[in-house]
Amino acid sequence: MNRRRVIVAALPTAVVLVAAVVLLVVDRRTVVVSAPLGTMLLVAAVIVAAVTVVALVWRAHVRRAVSRAKEDATGSAAAEHRRFLDRLDHELKNPITAIRAAVAVSDAATPQLASIDAQTTRMARLVGDLRKLGELQTAPMERVPVDPGTIVTDVAATVGDAHGRDIRVTLPSAPWPLPSVTGDPDLLFTAVHNVVANAVKYSDPGDTVEIRGIERSGRVVVEVADTGRGIPAADVASVLQELARASNARDRPGSGLGLALVRTIVDRHGGTVTVDSHEGRGTRVSIELPVGVG
Image (cartoon, rainbow, N blue to C red; front, side):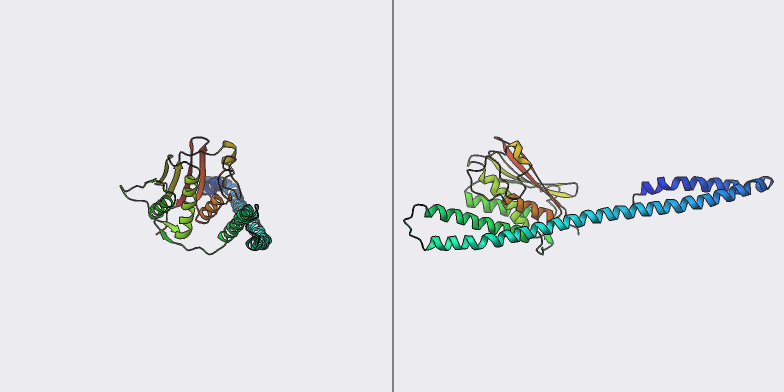
Protein backbone atom coordinates (compact mmCIF):
# COMPACT_ATOMS: atom_id res chain seq x y z
CA MET A 1 0.00 0.00 0.00
CA ASN A 2 1.41 3.41 -1.00
CA ARG A 3 2.67 5.32 2.07
CA ARG A 4 1.64 8.71 0.66
CA ARG A 5 -1.93 7.51 0.09
CA VAL A 6 -2.14 6.24 3.66
CA ILE A 7 -0.94 9.59 5.01
CA VAL A 8 -3.38 11.57 2.86
CA ALA A 9 -6.28 9.27 3.79
CA ALA A 10 -5.47 9.61 7.50
CA LEU A 11 -5.35 13.43 7.49
CA PRO A 12 -9.10 13.98 8.12
CA THR A 13 -8.98 11.60 11.09
CA ALA A 14 -5.93 13.34 12.50
CA VAL A 15 -7.54 16.77 12.18
CA VAL A 16 -10.68 15.63 13.99
CA LEU A 17 -8.66 13.96 16.75
CA VAL A 18 -6.55 17.08 17.32
CA ALA A 19 -9.65 19.25 17.48
CA ALA A 20 -11.25 16.90 20.00
CA VAL A 21 -8.19 16.83 22.22
CA VAL A 22 -7.89 20.62 22.14
CA LEU A 23 -11.49 21.03 23.20
CA LEU A 24 -11.16 18.47 26.00
CA VAL A 25 -8.01 19.94 27.50
CA VAL A 26 -9.15 23.56 27.64
CA ASP A 27 -9.10 25.17 31.04
CA ARG A 28 -11.67 24.11 33.61
CA ARG A 29 -13.85 27.18 33.17
CA THR A 30 -14.87 25.97 29.73
CA VAL A 31 -14.71 22.22 30.20
CA VAL A 32 -18.42 22.00 30.99
CA VAL A 33 -19.21 23.69 27.70
CA SER A 34 -16.50 21.97 25.66
CA ALA A 35 -16.66 18.41 26.93
CA PRO A 36 -19.83 17.35 25.08
CA LEU A 37 -18.47 18.79 21.85
CA GLY A 38 -15.10 17.14 22.46
CA THR A 39 -16.77 13.80 23.13
CA MET A 40 -18.77 14.11 19.94
CA LEU A 41 -15.62 14.91 18.00
CA LEU A 42 -13.84 11.90 19.49
CA VAL A 43 -16.71 9.65 18.46
CA ALA A 44 -16.66 11.20 15.00
CA ALA A 45 -12.91 10.68 14.82
CA VAL A 46 -13.27 7.00 15.70
CA ILE A 47 -15.95 6.58 13.02
CA VAL A 48 -13.83 8.40 10.43
CA ALA A 49 -10.82 6.28 11.37
CA ALA A 50 -12.82 3.07 11.03
CA VAL A 51 -14.22 4.12 7.66
CA THR A 52 -10.74 5.12 6.47
CA VAL A 53 -9.23 1.79 7.49
CA VAL A 54 -12.05 -0.16 5.85
CA ALA A 55 -11.71 1.91 2.66
CA LEU A 56 -7.94 1.39 2.51
CA VAL A 57 -8.22 -2.34 3.18
CA TRP A 58 -10.98 -2.71 0.59
CA ARG A 59 -8.98 -0.75 -2.00
CA ALA A 60 -5.93 -2.96 -1.39
CA HIS A 61 -8.14 -6.05 -1.68
CA VAL A 62 -9.57 -4.85 -5.01
CA ARG A 63 -6.10 -4.12 -6.37
CA ARG A 64 -4.90 -7.58 -5.37
CA ALA A 65 -7.98 -9.17 -6.93
CA VAL A 66 -7.45 -7.29 -10.20
CA SER A 67 -3.77 -8.24 -10.21
CA ARG A 68 -4.63 -11.92 -9.62
CA ALA A 69 -7.23 -11.82 -12.38
CA LYS A 70 -4.68 -10.40 -14.82
CA GLU A 71 -2.13 -13.04 -13.82
CA ASP A 72 -4.72 -15.81 -14.19
CA ALA A 73 -5.73 -14.50 -17.62
CA THR A 74 -2.10 -14.31 -18.72
CA GLY A 75 -1.42 -17.82 -17.40
CA SER A 76 -4.50 -19.19 -19.14
CA ALA A 77 -3.51 -17.59 -22.45
CA ALA A 78 0.03 -18.96 -22.12
CA ALA A 79 -1.29 -22.45 -21.37
CA GLU A 80 -3.61 -22.33 -24.37
CA HIS A 81 -0.72 -21.16 -26.53
CA ARG A 82 1.43 -24.07 -25.36
CA ARG A 83 -1.40 -26.51 -26.12
CA PHE A 84 -1.66 -25.07 -29.63
CA LEU A 85 2.08 -25.55 -30.20
CA ASP A 86 1.84 -29.12 -28.94
CA ARG A 87 -1.09 -29.88 -31.29
CA LEU A 88 0.72 -28.26 -34.20
CA ASP A 89 3.83 -30.32 -33.51
CA HIS A 90 1.78 -33.52 -33.34
CA GLU A 91 -0.24 -32.80 -36.50
CA LEU A 92 2.77 -31.84 -38.64
CA LYS A 93 5.37 -34.33 -37.46
CA ASN A 94 3.78 -37.49 -38.83
CA PRO A 95 3.01 -36.19 -42.37
CA ILE A 96 6.51 -34.74 -42.66
CA THR A 97 8.07 -38.02 -41.58
CA ALA A 98 5.96 -39.91 -44.16
CA ILE A 99 6.92 -37.51 -46.98
CA ARG A 100 10.62 -37.73 -46.14
CA ALA A 101 10.41 -41.54 -46.08
CA ALA A 102 8.73 -41.52 -49.48
CA VAL A 103 11.41 -39.23 -50.88
CA ALA A 104 14.13 -41.52 -49.57
CA VAL A 105 12.84 -44.49 -51.59
CA SER A 106 11.87 -42.54 -54.72
CA ASP A 107 13.76 -42.44 -58.00
CA ALA A 108 16.61 -39.99 -57.54
CA ALA A 109 16.21 -38.88 -61.17
CA THR A 110 12.80 -37.31 -60.46
CA PRO A 111 13.26 -33.55 -61.12
CA GLN A 112 11.03 -32.37 -58.30
CA LEU A 113 12.61 -34.65 -55.72
CA ALA A 114 15.29 -32.22 -54.58
CA SER A 115 12.74 -29.45 -54.07
CA ILE A 116 10.40 -31.74 -52.13
CA ASP A 117 13.26 -32.92 -49.94
CA ALA A 118 14.43 -29.36 -49.26
CA GLN A 119 10.94 -28.17 -48.32
CA THR A 120 10.24 -31.12 -46.03
CA THR A 121 13.60 -30.55 -44.34
CA ARG A 122 12.62 -26.92 -43.83
CA MET A 123 9.23 -27.95 -42.41
CA ALA A 124 10.89 -30.48 -40.10
CA ARG A 125 13.19 -27.75 -38.81
CA LEU A 126 10.22 -25.43 -38.31
CA VAL A 127 8.34 -28.08 -36.30
CA GLY A 128 11.43 -28.68 -34.21
CA ASP A 129 11.76 -24.96 -33.49
CA LEU A 130 8.09 -24.73 -32.56
CA ARG A 131 8.51 -27.67 -30.18
CA LYS A 132 11.57 -26.02 -28.66
CA LEU A 133 9.68 -22.75 -28.24
CA GLY A 134 6.81 -24.50 -26.46
CA GLU A 135 9.19 -26.35 -24.15
CA LEU A 136 11.11 -23.18 -23.31
CA GLN A 137 7.99 -21.55 -21.91
CA THR A 138 7.55 -24.13 -19.13
CA ALA A 139 10.70 -26.26 -18.86
CA PRO A 140 12.69 -26.09 -15.60
CA MET A 141 15.49 -23.56 -15.91
CA GLU A 142 18.87 -23.54 -14.22
CA ARG A 143 19.53 -20.44 -12.12
CA VAL A 144 23.21 -19.84 -11.45
CA PRO A 145 25.49 -16.80 -11.66
CA VAL A 146 26.36 -16.19 -15.32
CA ASP A 147 29.11 -13.92 -16.63
CA PRO A 148 27.58 -12.01 -19.57
CA GLY A 149 31.05 -11.04 -20.80
CA THR A 150 31.95 -14.71 -21.25
CA ILE A 151 28.68 -15.36 -23.07
CA VAL A 152 29.36 -12.48 -25.45
CA THR A 153 32.95 -13.46 -26.26
CA ASP A 154 32.00 -17.13 -26.74
CA VAL A 155 29.15 -16.22 -29.10
CA ALA A 156 31.37 -13.83 -31.08
CA ALA A 157 33.99 -16.54 -31.54
CA THR A 158 31.44 -19.23 -32.45
CA VAL A 159 29.51 -17.17 -35.02
CA GLY A 160 32.63 -15.48 -36.37
CA ASP A 161 34.38 -18.81 -37.00
CA ALA A 162 31.28 -20.39 -38.54
CA HIS A 163 30.76 -17.58 -41.04
CA GLY A 164 34.26 -16.22 -41.50
CA ARG A 165 33.27 -12.83 -40.12
CA ASP A 166 35.09 -10.42 -37.82
CA ILE A 167 32.67 -9.56 -35.01
CA ARG A 168 33.71 -6.63 -32.84
CA VAL A 169 33.23 -6.96 -29.09
CA THR A 170 33.25 -4.01 -26.70
CA LEU A 171 33.02 -4.82 -22.99
CA PRO A 172 33.83 -2.59 -20.00
CA SER A 173 36.88 -3.30 -17.86
CA ALA A 174 37.09 -0.08 -15.81
CA PRO A 175 36.13 0.67 -13.17
CA TRP A 176 34.79 -2.90 -13.20
CA PRO A 177 33.60 -5.50 -15.71
CA LEU A 178 29.97 -6.40 -16.31
CA PRO A 179 28.31 -7.88 -13.21
CA SER A 180 26.92 -11.39 -13.35
CA VAL A 181 23.28 -12.16 -14.04
CA THR A 182 21.28 -15.06 -12.63
CA GLY A 183 20.02 -17.61 -15.10
CA ASP A 184 20.62 -20.55 -17.37
CA PRO A 185 23.98 -20.19 -19.17
CA ASP A 186 22.97 -22.42 -22.11
CA LEU A 187 19.73 -20.54 -22.72
CA LEU A 188 21.43 -17.15 -22.45
CA PHE A 189 24.09 -18.33 -24.91
CA THR A 190 21.30 -19.38 -27.30
CA ALA A 191 19.57 -16.00 -27.00
CA VAL A 192 22.70 -13.97 -27.76
CA HIS A 193 23.77 -16.45 -30.45
CA ASN A 194 20.45 -16.13 -32.29
CA VAL A 195 20.68 -12.35 -32.36
CA VAL A 196 24.30 -12.32 -33.56
CA ALA A 197 23.61 -15.02 -36.17
CA ASN A 198 20.72 -12.89 -37.46
CA ALA A 199 22.98 -9.85 -37.70
CA VAL A 200 25.45 -11.86 -39.77
CA LYS A 201 22.73 -13.43 -41.94
CA TYR A 202 21.20 -10.11 -42.94
CA SER A 203 24.43 -8.24 -43.55
CA ASP A 204 27.14 -8.60 -46.19
CA PRO A 205 30.75 -9.64 -45.53
CA GLY A 206 31.93 -6.02 -45.67
CA ASP A 207 29.33 -4.80 -43.14
CA THR A 208 30.05 -4.24 -39.46
CA VAL A 209 28.67 -6.47 -36.71
CA GLU A 210 29.29 -5.34 -33.13
CA ILE A 211 28.40 -6.65 -29.69
CA ARG A 212 28.48 -4.10 -26.88
CA GLY A 213 27.92 -4.65 -23.18
CA ILE A 214 27.14 -2.02 -20.55
CA GLU A 215 25.69 -1.84 -17.05
CA ARG A 216 22.82 0.61 -16.58
CA SER A 217 20.55 1.17 -13.60
CA GLY A 218 20.95 -2.29 -12.12
CA ARG A 219 20.65 -4.06 -15.46
CA VAL A 220 23.12 -5.57 -17.89
CA VAL A 221 22.50 -4.46 -21.47
CA VAL A 222 23.90 -6.46 -24.39
CA GLU A 223 23.52 -4.70 -27.73
CA VAL A 224 24.04 -6.42 -31.07
CA ALA A 225 24.36 -3.89 -33.88
CA ASP A 226 25.03 -4.24 -37.59
CA THR A 227 25.21 -2.09 -40.70
CA GLY A 228 23.27 -4.61 -42.77
CA ARG A 229 20.06 -4.29 -44.74
CA GLY A 230 17.90 -3.23 -41.79
CA ILE A 231 14.20 -3.89 -41.25
CA PRO A 232 11.35 -1.99 -42.94
CA ALA A 233 9.63 0.35 -40.48
CA ALA A 234 6.31 -1.48 -40.86
CA ASP A 235 7.89 -4.77 -39.76
CA VAL A 236 9.97 -3.67 -36.75
CA ALA A 237 7.14 -4.03 -34.24
CA SER A 238 6.39 -7.63 -35.24
CA VAL A 239 9.80 -9.27 -35.72
CA LEU A 240 9.85 -10.60 -32.15
CA GLN A 241 6.62 -12.52 -32.74
CA GLU A 242 6.47 -16.18 -33.72
CA LEU A 243 6.81 -16.94 -37.45
CA ALA A 244 7.26 -13.24 -38.23
CA ARG A 245 9.79 -12.28 -40.89
CA ALA A 246 10.59 -8.89 -42.35
CA SER A 247 9.31 -8.33 -45.88
CA ASN A 248 12.87 -7.86 -47.16
CA ALA A 249 14.14 -11.13 -45.64
CA ARG A 250 12.46 -13.63 -47.95
CA ASP A 251 15.65 -14.29 -49.91
CA ARG A 252 17.39 -15.77 -46.84
CA PRO A 253 16.45 -19.11 -45.23
CA GLY A 254 14.72 -18.92 -41.86
CA SER A 255 11.68 -19.99 -39.87
CA GLY A 256 10.78 -16.68 -38.26
CA LEU A 257 11.26 -18.23 -34.82
CA GLY A 258 14.81 -17.14 -33.97
CA LEU A 259 13.91 -13.84 -32.33
CA ALA A 260 10.77 -15.33 -30.78
CA LEU A 261 13.03 -17.82 -29.00
CA VAL A 262 15.21 -14.91 -27.86
CA ARG A 263 12.18 -13.08 -26.47
CA THR A 264 10.95 -16.18 -24.62
CA ILE A 265 14.37 -16.85 -23.06
CA VAL A 266 14.85 -13.25 -22.00
CA ASP A 267 11.30 -13.04 -20.60
CA ARG A 268 11.97 -16.07 -18.42
CA HIS A 269 15.06 -14.31 -17.07
CA GLY A 270 13.05 -11.22 -16.12
CA GLY A 271 14.52 -9.15 -18.94
CA THR A 272 13.39 -7.33 -22.07
CA VAL A 273 14.29 -7.32 -25.76
CA THR A 274 13.96 -4.27 -28.00
CA VAL A 275 14.65 -3.84 -31.72
CA ASP A 276 15.63 -0.59 -33.42
CA SER A 277 16.23 -0.58 -37.14
CA HIS A 278 16.37 1.60 -40.24
CA GLU A 279 16.03 -0.09 -43.60
CA GLY A 280 19.21 0.26 -45.61
CA ARG A 281 21.25 1.38 -42.59
CA GLY A 282 21.23 -1.45 -40.06
CA THR A 283 19.69 -2.90 -36.91
CA ARG A 284 20.31 -2.83 -33.17
CA VAL A 285 18.86 -5.49 -30.86
CA SER A 286 19.15 -4.80 -27.12
CA ILE A 287 18.84 -7.49 -24.47
CA GLU A 288 18.40 -6.19 -20.92
CA LEU A 289 18.77 -8.51 -17.94
CA PRO A 290 18.59 -7.75 -14.22
CA VAL A 291 21.88 -7.91 -12.37
CA GLY A 292 22.19 -11.11 -10.35
CA VAL A 293 21.40 -10.99 -6.62
CA GLY A 294 24.13 -12.00 -4.21
